[in-house]
Length: 487
Image 1: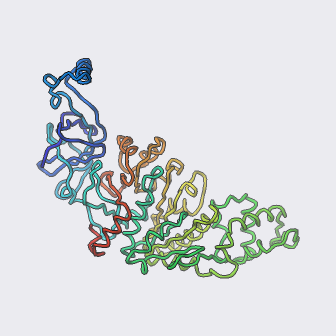
Image 2 (image 1 turned 180 degrees about the horizontal axis):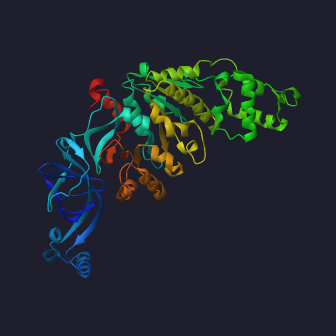
Image 3 (image 1 turned 180 degrees about the vertical axis):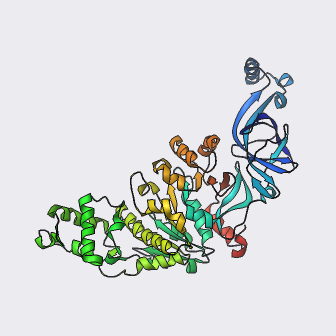
């Protein structure tokens, strides 16, 4: 295979290579050094100009060219002026397995571009999670990345990117492929009413996809939650109650059990008979404000005093059966949306605690709304404890820096798309499974759909390209389901 560059110096984490004059190297490109015991994969993380000529001579030669005076005779451009790339070794492939590189390639080794055949060491798990195709610079290979869903989903996935960099498109692709099977249940809280429209045409949608909405399209179910399905703990870290209001909720719940909401919401202003709960007196003002806040959060289009008794259990059953459940919250206030998510997440989490084993994941957009410093709610509990019970989060955000460091560190797989904000890149790099210190420039320059996957379950941070969703669907329609597992 054609040699495109050659090693000319450097050290283990920063090897210097010279680019061949008729070739072009790119940031993030993967190169291969063929060794006697296998091959070493290296990745470009910096590019710079170099020349054997002194700066003054270069300026003089530039002047000659600008003034249309030939300088080729003495410049020997392809020999004396060249590009130096800095690369790092990311994997040593030996006996069909990838290892962390512990030695340098041979000095003066010629390097070639990565080919699909060099990636035979990548595993094809029994429970695959599609994560795009391998990308080398801007060149996309045919090899798809299939992560092990049994490892990745329960230990949380962070999808982080700037605006317009392809977060939603990437998730459409991941969920579309997950619909091929029923080994993992995924709850999607959809604040833009986009996911069901994208996924409903999947061949397995009738078996593996369920959708709920206050205004359901054909094929979707009506979203209604009965008052008795709502408990005081569902509001924790979601609706900003004062201590007094929170205490009042619990006092009503202890006194009236499942009818606690009826008792609060049915109370008339000035009704002195409701100021006493058991042997405790409640302040009139506290109850009045609590009633207003509950009425604002419990949107009447969703929460019903009659009807919707089985909705929460039905959704939890669907997740246990490995289905993908999309809940449309696009027309609801933020507090109502998050309250619905809290109710459903609590039920899924409790079931996982009682009977761990089934893979489940909860996808939430704009994750810092519920994963933030000092807040305790079901989502932060799942982020910290869910892996023990097989339930995880798929947290999507533009602002990873707003998520607490402890939670970021617990997210073992990060899909990092383009982000031009330095603060956000630093937060992602600091919490990545691999050392991405030298990749900040490459991350800032990622185009739409291009990503870096950093996971404790991969040997190195893998550059990938998510296909355009419509192209993936069109391609899959030509391929049998059984063949897509390893496409």
